[in-house]
Length: 253
Image 1 (cartoon, rainbow, N blue to C red):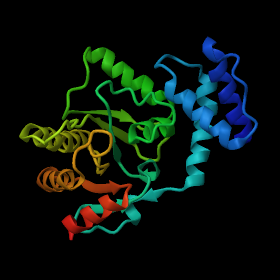
Image 2 (image 1 turned 180 degrees about the horizontal axis):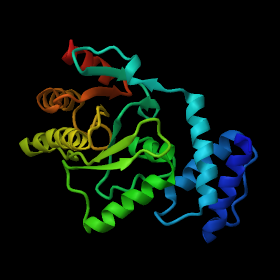
Image 3 (image 1 turned 135 degrees about the horizontal axis):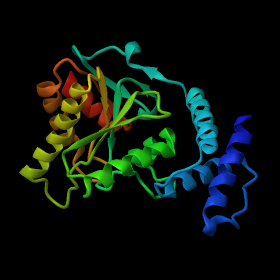
Image 4 (image 1 turned 45 degrees about the horizontal axis):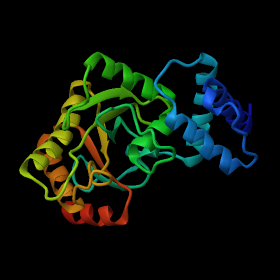
């Protein structure tokens, strides 16, 4: 199958399986099809799906990933021993694990084509990621506490694993407890990686987007905590905005 044929197959499957979308016309344009496919994957609830769908989805997502290209941690230059700063799309990083700034439900972002990292990671990993996250949450029986972390396979991402952590949401002034919880996110991810012998971890800027933690203060907490707890784990500070890149460059010298 070509990518266009795979995309049409996936779209038709997702439209057919949900009664409210069965009269939805299939867009003719490639850009519109891509957006609709992402939207349907974003809103799909965590329920089983056929092996045929997964096989086609995996081929499609892996081809899309190959077209975007990968950045291997082995090709990066450390800014200090064991620490890296990289500006780019975290879904293209080839390393041990990437960190997802998740919400308390832990099953991803359900807003179609939302710009958050949670949405991007789930979209590029495939529907399996939401399914396995839902299994974790059903066993746990309650929302994910702020400052802790969970480990899942990465499925169609180029990394091996995803570390999901819920950062503090800031309402007004940053409190001492907010700072402690943000540090706990970094520490929990590193401890979980070390227990599972994951050699490298890429951190996003946890809590700084939709959760409104001030970027500079969040970066200082990130750097201080990683330096204290990383052990032998190689750490990539991944940034997506120029402002965050400048902040981390200053902090890391």
